[in-house]
Image (cartoon, rainbow, N blue to C red; front, side, top):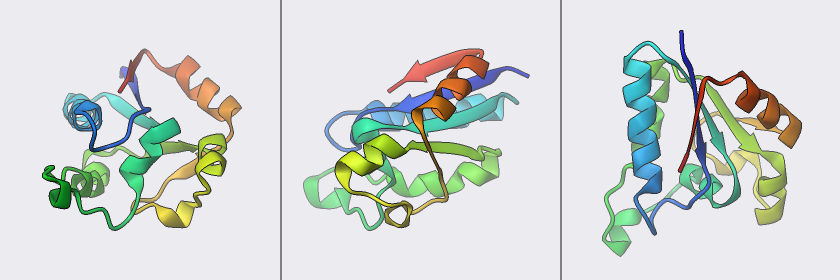
Length: 118
């Protein structure tokens, strides 16, 4: 089974990167690939609770992250250094994540067959 890791580095509403990364995750998982997600830098904002993108004229694709378990996407890593930079805790996120140090992220990247950055 091919291992795909998708890194989310950009915020959710100022570009299409988050939506494209999410679509790739679901598509890859539907083809029996092992999919892992990493959220770092502004990408953490994709996971924040109580977003209202419709207020700024954007579609709400963020809520669909709750479908990840249906696609067996269980590895969702969040960079602790990025969390500390923004003053976030795991309670700020609306889906379960694994908070980890950069060395754990590095190991995840080394084990992947493909890495995509959004």
